[in-house]
Length: 503
Image: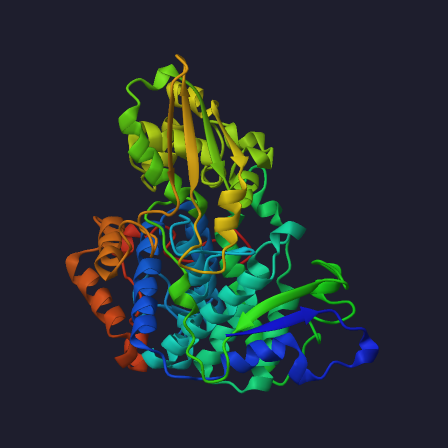
């Protein structure tokens, strides 16, 4: 890996294209080095993981609305699949990506990477697969595209912080999605450079989508990025240029949206010919909640065995990282994070709520743990309001450690009982983390798929999809068209265009 300095230059410097950061991203995207078995296996794991959470959310309202919009853009010649729909039903690739990204993202239950910023790199997978289906690409092409999208995304997240400027992380996701599509299609460096710049330029949005009362827009963010990215690649393929240099320019993203003309960012990228392994630094979720809560859910399940009477708890203090304290903890100063009537999306971003329920139940469920009756249970509300968070240097340092073997997103919890006794414990990593107590392997991903799709699809469809995914590198274009999960049509809500909106 090589570290690259990214900073603002005055227009008169006329920064050469080859020295621009977007060009460097394009160069690694178009450096088609062989993909090793370890990386290939992880890509397959994430395709399975995405499908499992997508099927489980197929009939949730944000997903049904996204699908309704997509179904209004049907194609009869070539197109892409939509999760849940018949495999021979196709829509325009950008609309398939829109619907499928929403399905993957809705439950906040797929993969994550946390560093200088936040990310869900698996959000690129639906965009890559949709374009592959529409343009008749092979499984090997899909693999190349997904690997490139992860490499761009993870390394952007390592080097450039968006959230401190209240910019949403789609600004890293959209360029990564564009890179993935370009790699899939085998486009040249010039076209990829233009597409990445366009993707960044059009994808800047604020973090209000993750503040206060969090709405269903959070589920749409990756689909929004995917549509923008696919359209950016399409324009670039037609010869259109882009704002340049988008990162270093005098009026660029860094100059006016991020840290300004005097700041320097350092972003690592693979050397020419070096294998792209960034996906191996990412991690999926065992529990359907914000990633920074994963270890704390596991810790709650462990600590509850030491609490005989929850009503005798005086207070609970969670010592954790800066990000956890200020984003999903009491440092956010969001009263909605203590509201029993808050949206699922808001509860998902309240570590106080999550820890209270996990402590009481000893487990976490992607539906039951968020039901209004669960959130409004009087004893839970009472316990919930006794929980606070505080930032501790130890946990912030672990959060930002550049060594993936040391990086951790846990915390220490001190439960103080009314009689003054304290129960304290800590956990650095979630059990399912690659360095955790029970790291997720292929059987865990398939087990998660089976758990989430039970009662939704039959064994024949389950086996068909798993078999295809596990043969990714061998898939023909015709088989890539089958790389989706089909449900009985009668079980798919809003399975036809309707007149609710414009489309």
